[in-house]
Image (cartoon, rainbow, N blue to C red):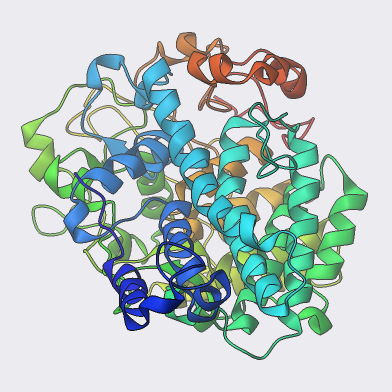
Length: 536
């Protein structure tokens, strides 16, 4: 499908060009770069593109294109691995859904996670990187926040990426190891927070579908994203974590996301008609259905959010599919398994208030900041209930139930599948007498439930911490495709396609930067050294 062009800015430029023929001597449109900056024309279209590419989304006229992109980045991969969704297809065991990282699919994933966003960001950066104009610095600040939001997903999936050398014009830029990427991203977020914290004027408001140009909300997002990254690295670099947790949570720096009005999400607006990109996989293809892992937790916990996440079938039943499904497309499962509750207008969430509370809870647990881990944990659950419009949080937080085990014949479209999930698992109720490890398990398990449907973030947290415990893959040979051990429950990362090695000789450094082979079983930098093994 052809990608929809932004006709209004283009027509505006042509109209300006036709007003005074005598002045058409600076460029083909008859307007100076400065005039384009003042009208937002120079930055507007690439900034809109950047926002659409963080988590792939597109206009209704783009049909299945953005839907296929999201299936590749989030649905068939991350969300399937951690059991948000079960796939009603195995694609002949030839895609990332069954851990087969083919060259074509990995090249496609690298485009979706990294390259497309680079092109849009670079269209802005090349005009702002040497400018000392305050307005240009503000534009670069919001563009860099969006860049970090998108490329954080890229490094958390692939590991090494080109970051510190991005936009410098090198034909073959050098890649950075993930620890260096994180340090540079955190520094960029801090700078953006400082720039935007000092302005009261709107930034690119005509082209901003996240915050309508509000610099205070962009500052909060920068600080919240900084908090996400700082907490992520504390097992590997405690001093770096403390530095940026302290900065992010200092109220004098603009604050973090505290409520639903401040959360970062993208959906259709009057400025830019968009359609939730889950719809093609859910409705057009009938392939994305409720995952058995999230069902097992929410069913066992009697979690009222279950009905806000998924549809029922046959009146009141929730029917799930297991992770890494080994069965081909099943017409009966299209109608007989629960669907994600999603409409064209449903938002895709970048960062929500509940996540910030869980980040604070983990930071307090490991003494990266002051605060009561229990209060912050319960605040996170409470905010998630509010975000999903459900009641009953007080009784839920007193619950002592464990997640449900999946016995044979529990899943009607995979009736032989069975897996124990309750062993060594946790309930929602906080107990101050629990070990530090059990408290972390509770925080991450509830964070997993609150992050839905932010699949890459949930997959990342599982790989980092070992929580929540997951159901095993239905395809029991998946591990062999990525060089993993037989008890692997998810891949550790995507690999780079050979085409990437052919276009940049510096890709030869990837194994050194990774500290292991370029394969799906190689752990990323932020994985804790003592990540627990899930009991069987």
